[in-house]
Length: 379
Image 1 (spheres, rainbow, N blue to C red):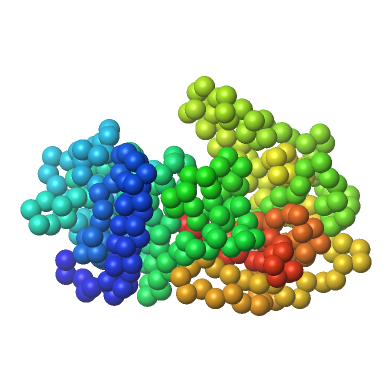
Image 2 (spheres, helix red, strand yellow):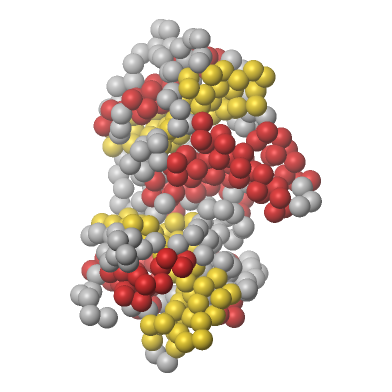
């Protein structure tokens, strides 16, 4: 490699090594099978360094999008093997990137004769496998597959230029932490990745993916109190509630063809998330019945205007801040904070067009709205 060293790679390598060592040791004690090899700091640094410099290059005017997985070929299941290994170098990664740009495909990286090489590609990786994803120039995410199968990997750290954000697992221990946030932080606790949380996570990922920004309100079932915080008439009220997503969740335990069920769930999630691109809020119940979309939020009669919220981000070193909702974003953020203030049993999910994602929930401890910035977990 001729490029200078990427300082953030060395800065975060030891922390990432400790993370994987801890979770792999815990998984072994529980008797977990099919575990990935443990990455060491020098290997982590080398992979990050190569990926970072590759992300700044162009191949026929396209910025590379790559996912690198550290594992030997024999742990990759069905795999595409190259006759000749490729050196782990920025120019090599840039050239091969178009072949593995689709989601779910990883370039396999492993050691050979003292160096690191790309041996091929795979869709199958073992539990707790080190994965480095290049999302855009200078933006890298370190993640791993969870102990339970799910569509969302657990993020460990996000690197963007000289900025390094390490996810703080202890954030999941907050007494009033929303279920969505607890799930995204559930690195090695299968109990936190239950079906109800899984749907909210998939909705959050899909909302963020459509790139138009959106607002999703999750309200208690069998109640109409949420309507007191909505302008009437609602442009797109759904009567009776659209229940396809709810029906799929009820079928979960009895589904014989898991692949077909997961495909149907994914399509339904994308359909609901797509509605959030319409101006206004999409409203679903906690049981995933679609109640309305395009709804305009208004302050409930007799309620005070929200002046401040607690804002946190689940990263190491992140400190709570008392902010005006307008400091978090635009109209969607202001409306979401007001809705949760007036309807404390509800949760509001807000996706910004620039990729930021905020979960608004009522904090019983602080007796005010808590804004959880979670885009670091959704990348």
